Amino acid sequence: MYAVISEGALVALCDKPRYVKINENTGLYVRAEKEDAIGISVNGKLYNLPGSSVIAGAPEAIVRDGDVSEYVFSNRARIEVNAESTETAFVSVENAVCELDSSIQDRLAVVETALCELDTLITGGEEDE
Image 1 (spheres, rainbow, N blue to C red):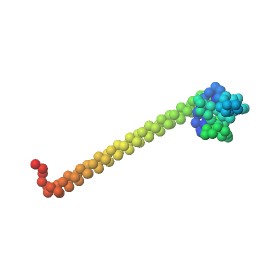
Image 2: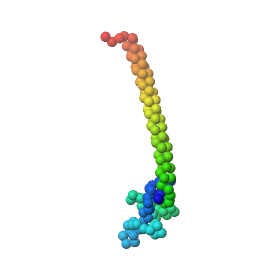
Image 3: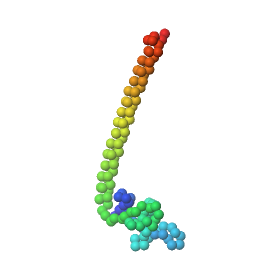
Image 4: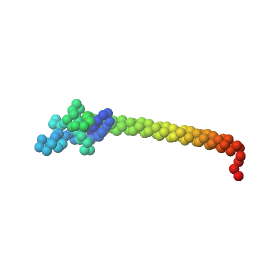
């Protein structure tokens, strides 16, 4: 089993990497043997081989031969950490919104009290009939 890794993240697990080169006649990317390759294709996305920038705008990717269970385990652990971080972020945002709402309610109460006091001063304490 091979792992394709780009920018530190697992991009794909595959039985055989899909190496590519540029067809001399058409200029299109076609399958290639590892020795002739300029890049790797994963689900239609192109990656440069390490140290290469032949494919303009494409990130680099490395191909590692390894045990699939190792990659699955490490990615599952990373997913769990991300899920915990996401949950913590939602709770933090929810708490901030609640504090903001409470602050707004306090400010509205102060404004309402000030308006009542102002009305009392203007009308001289007379009540509407």
